[in-house]
Image (cartoon, rainbow, N blue to C red; front, side, top):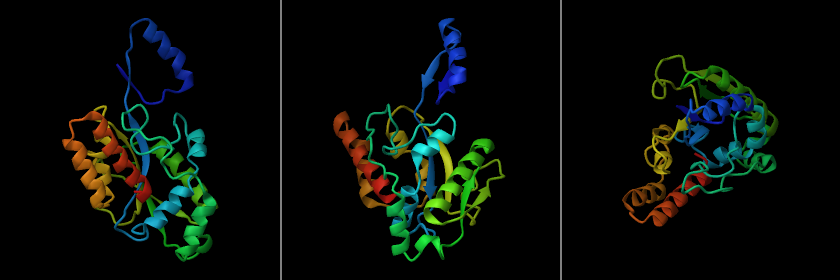
Length: 231
């Protein structure tokens, strides 16, 4: 068996041949790569600054430059899952990002504190290096901010033992094909230290809701809060 993330085009022909011979079964599993902010540590305890960094990220360009990715323009719940909401994510708008930075006292990034991006949390060093280089260039151009690379060198995820990072990059693979795997049981959101009572209420109502349509609507509302708060 194989789990199909996004299979490279050069491998697709080979994969099709194995499938035709009944030697391979491909399963599609919901998966999201994302940047997460530490929301209780300056500067990203300010939600406006989190939004500025999201607005300054060209996800279409990022997906083109990083092999086998699709741009995330919807919510945190990925496509092909019930509860997915297309186009609710903050769209690329570097001018608005610059306006927010200036309003917060950091025109063209001047005076912005040093920030670190924690990488290599699951041992995918090559891909993480590429993501870092693209984000570093993008945020330098659009915000005037330089980020530092913080490398996870342990066999475990060093979330609690380090104080030198302000955001982290990692992928989340659904434990089961349901939006609850992203919204309700995802420990990565917990690592941001973000708290929102409205979000928690919607998630808990979704957990208890038996009506599937109403449950999906509750998760969509929770997803919208995640996007608005730029967690």
